[in-house]
Length: 249
Image (cartoon, rainbow, N blue to C red; front, side, top):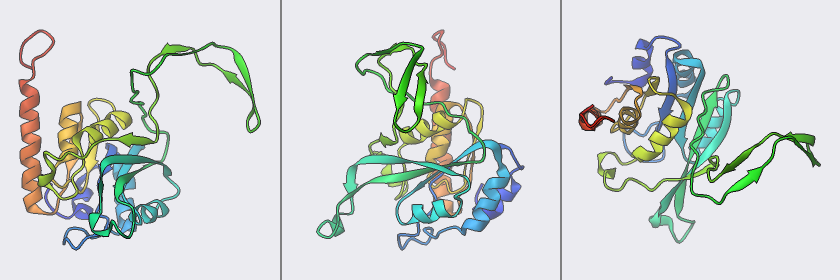
């Protein structure tokens, strides 16, 4: 959809979106598109279109992220820190540390889908069922874990290198791999993801790659056209991938 997101979101049926994944304008640059969307109007539309158990996952950086969380403390749950590996802010390097992280804030009304994307290759750990643990804070707790695995649950700091090969599409472009990670975590295949400020369409590409439906809105026509092309190319590439029986999907 091309146009103002607050207007175009009105065309989406209520309670039909499983996840909102969006890199909202932070209001930290002089770019004409980098204007903070009024939170009250934004949340009114978000709360209308999202399902009761849908996740709203929003990128941010300080001080924008603090204002964003405060705008909806009722539904705010936690932050994920995205470690970008490569630092930015060299113009201020003599005044403050280089910035190599951004914040991903997670909101939901009711417990949302959560598919933890485990990491592998760790040293094996073992535990047995039925032990009781005594803790100073929570008292006696039963240890019901049984595992002998090299997998580990994800932590609140996630490392994804900036997609430097494709960063020319949009000045604040996020890595496709990071968006895929978030989409797999908070949705299941065949569900619907909304990005109401989609920029160059990275969320849409990630949806194609992970088998999700996508609704994208962008007000800048030049980025909208880039997004259309990138998403179409991702779809064509997926269609060319061989299936399990050696044919083309």
